[in-house]
Length: 286
Image 1: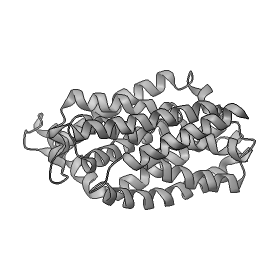
Image 2: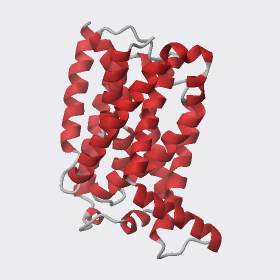
Image 3: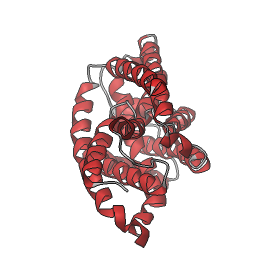
Image 4: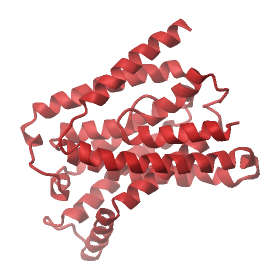
């Protein structure tokens, strides 16, 4: 179904492109078509493979931000004990914002994942959505520049905690657009954060934190299939692919956390526009 070599390449690609706002799912659909691999991306085994590589990425994110997650978890339990979220308890507020932001993406994913599966097998659709993703990133940068609230001097949990409940729901909802291959989950959620006044660093941090529970929830629903008898033919390849994804995810998050301290989404937008336009033309002619 999927060879070890293919698993290594796709795993490395997923870990890299999941955190960069360029759509890991889109690249996982496009690359096999470009290389002529006979992989059926809308089959159940390939979805299991993708979930496993995403889970590896989520685990890396959780460990990378462990100090922050520790404060968030303690804050949530503190609020449950006190039966309210203190106005000055930034980490408790951030924890509940992550909970609220996870719910809409999870619900949308459960309701529509089967109906959207046809897009997983279409490199043509993925290229078109990649082009659209580039426009979304450019729009996010335009809104950031024109939003006076997006000028915080430094990143902090306090900045993110000021988002508010409805805005967390909105950001959680828009990241569900990543069900379309070519639309970036991290890019969508970062765009939402920039829209509501976060700076690039805070928007990226909130996006990375928000990725952990939603990917973990998807893994709980899908990964048990990896341990069934029918999965024996692709289990080893999936495990190797997940390890490769973990490696590039670690390198990616280390780079991006520093990158967004002083840089913007514009280079990623240009890449998505150029790649999406070129690939759309190529697939239309072949």
